[in-house]
Image (cartoon, rainbow, N blue to C red; front, top):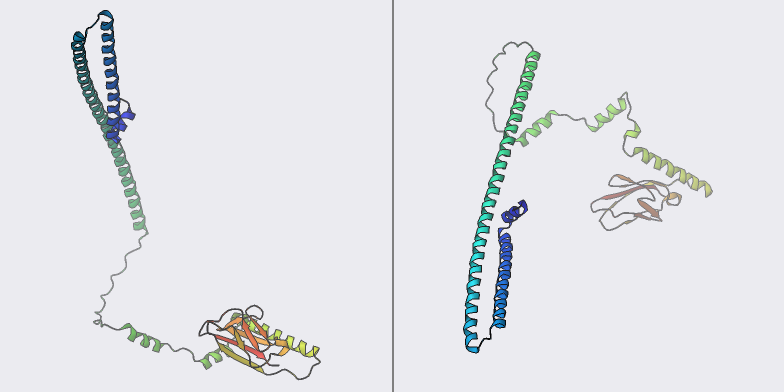
Length: 300
């Protein structure tokens, strides 16, 4: 029996024995057909040699049938013995094969285990050597021992304190500068604060300069006269719905004299985040609730 059949019997014993039984039954049918054909052949020979009468033919048929049954029974018995012998032989070979495989597996495991033990011992030995070297290096690096320190005094017993009560005490020790003090320090400082460091200031100044220039240009083109109007500052509340806000006055310079427009303190740019049409300020987005939209402009 090959390794393939052994693995088939081990992995699927039911399927393996069903296949064997089909093969045995097929062999049994072939033997049966051969026996029946042989008996029919003998009967035909007897018919050709002797003229049977009806009284003689019936007993001859019965004898032939009995003989055929006996031969078939013998054939079945022989087949059963062959089947049992084959199965016994298969079991023996299977057990021998598994015993051999188990023996080889145990030998392999033992060899691998010994190899791993040897590797582990080498690793432990090398590690111990490395540790010993590190210890020696540390010992050589250690400086001379210092003097023995004096015993400290016993502390007071601790008390349970609420952290919330400690915070005010700490904040009381911190004295932040008052606004006027901060202004005095800035004005008297040797190094002045650069305008570029103040967030948004340079943009505000640039927008203001451009608005004034546009206003002067428009006044010149209109023939002059009248002077610039007052600077107006208006605030509007966002409600997560409206995007248009009514101004009190027209903006000078054909609605271009906008000094600055802010949303919650963040600078907005004309044409990008807002537009002006007459006395209507329109944002290109929906201001959220509880927010502020503020505009500073020069009235016409």
